[in-house]
Length: 386
Image (cartoon, rainbow, N blue to C red; front, side, top):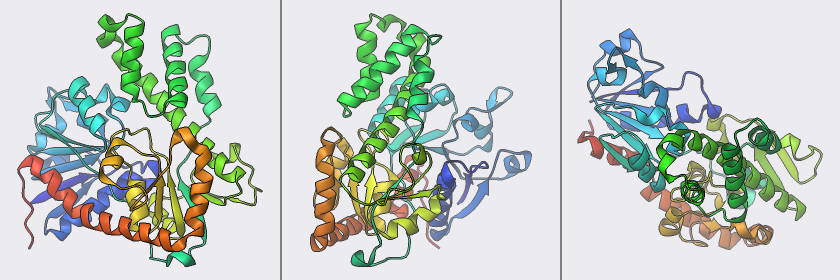
């Protein structure tokens, strides 16, 4: 079997997508499968023969045509497309009518959304992705109490851009509504809120006409809320005197560098976050508005034998056990978060039990090998070890 994996030639998102591509490629090679990495579609690559193509977040490429034929269809093999964000972030790009396209989403709600609002495809599954692993350090020898890996935007600037006078009233009103609802009831799904808003405004008949632009508003609102909660959570911990390390951009505008209990690592390439996580007792995750899935930071924490401290989702509630292999906090009760962190730091034996349970679970259930079997099952391809 020969597999072609598209890599991100711009190396966006701190190299995250390329890391996933390379790790999946390495796992395929371990099966005895030949893997080639493709930076872009070219005449030379079109001449190559593949049994399968794989890509991560490349909706523009999947929609590319040469004449009347989709370019990826010209390879004559299945294309598995990992979408690591909500599909409505790419609403218009995901209308490709490719003949042999499959999708992997990271959230069951994303799968449902695609089936309802996007172009038909061959099949869809819900999967996961695994982050980098550093050198194992004993829990008590770790020099980082709490680590958060994630960036924030300028939320005031983001808010001002979509609430200024020249923004259409409908867009401005929806944007403000989504943000206010997200602050009061963060458990709600964005698409449900939009449908409720349309119904309340008597706009259901115009839904198809408005939907692409509404999804752009949804994307901007979720970006705002993600940063809003990250900032609020870190502020809560710092005010309680807990020491926090942060790897990511944008934090300097919210917290002065001279704070004794804050260390700003700045931008860190994704493949290096494994080493940071391996030095952390607690990896603090803030879900990226996934309501029925989970994020690679969760598995990365567990693989590096750190405690994963995260807000929850339907998937997490069903597949993990709070206090056993994961520790959960509530976005509506952030006042409880500092004491939760302090308890974990003050009770290393109990914390190490959580760490061990999380590590055993992810090592057993969430592996690249298991993911390969899951995605190939969609295409009726079977890997054979040599």
